[in-house]
Length: 111
Image (cartoon, rainbow, N blue to C red; front, side):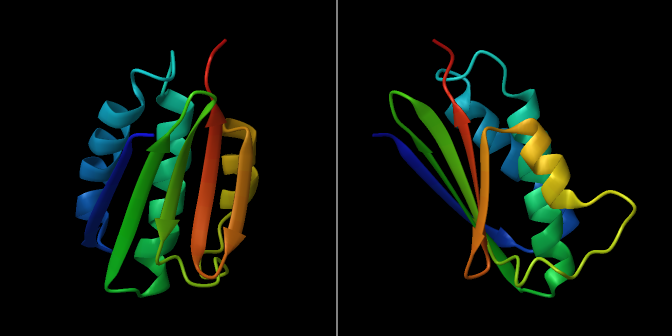
């Protein structure tokens, strides 16, 4: 099971790098990575606004899904906007969960 881990400062300047790494890792498993990348950006934005010094991104690919975990998001209650970031993430990927300051996104692979 391929796995990529990336630790970067929790700074908006690094969200593009995170997107590139996740895109490269997931491209072979998913036909279209765009929705996953938008969801990853939202999770990273939570980490940026949480005040954490760093965020850890773990991308795991298996036969049935791509899972991206973004650690360092705190409680997830920091950002208040007109659009709830969790609702947006849930609309984009197959499963979203939050536990102990980590957002886990799961996108099932195309059949």
